[in-house]
Length: 290
Ligand SMILES: Nc1ncnc2c1ncn2[C@@H]1O[C@H](COP(=O)(O)OP(=O)(O)OP(=O)(O)O)[C@@H](O)[C@H]1O
Image (cartoon, rainbow, N blue to C red):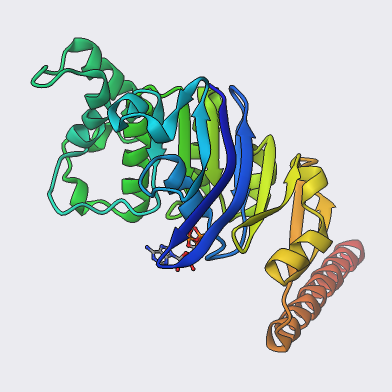
């Protein structure tokens, strides 16, 4: 499904947080929103999935006017993985994921065989099948994050919104979760912090600063060191990853202590290598004389 956001403005507690943002996500596209802490990414997403009411603007999912539609009709089409996934009540992992089926059911309709199969597949996808009977509240942050993604998958959405989906995840699950989402082949709008991951997985990036889009386009063209300096106030070098060929970013710390420690570790690596070379030479010459 295609998402079209036009001239969105959000004001919270008298402050303008989102200022005239327009963006599009085509069917099957993975679109990333990047930008520094507090620039308005979550607020923008929340206003798209109807948790916050925008002051002005429109959000359309295909022909449907999202801001004027009732939440249940939107939740049949749109899955959301939010940033904070804490609950006051305890549920099992299986029950949590089964909640993803709710938008497709009438009041009092019980879960059927198909629902169970869908939940099973969703749990399998995020590697949590063996956790089905565990209490959600006892899970680690990363495990909770994967349960919430499984719930969104069980919802079988035609469009996905993800707010920092890799927040609590170790690198294996960061890659796994983004690959799973990409393989769903539904339009996806995701706020991401890791620029290298954003460059790897996103078809299009929107860069937000102070509530405004300051750049957009394909990652290779958008992510320049000048833009990163302007938006994040940090120096970096961008290079082609020698193994994957993809874009890699090396951040350059401004902190002198860190620079000195890097220099020291470079020197000791060099000394270690030279030491190894010399002891190999000695071993060879001992072998030749005996
Ligand atoms: N309910 C609220 N009332 C007042 N200000 C708010 C409210 N919610 C968020 N803000 C402010 O709006 C700004 C944008 O917040 P938002 O959470 O959208 O940023 P973000 O880009 O998602 O940040 P992060 O990367 O840290 O998650 C912040 O300065 C935040 O303090």
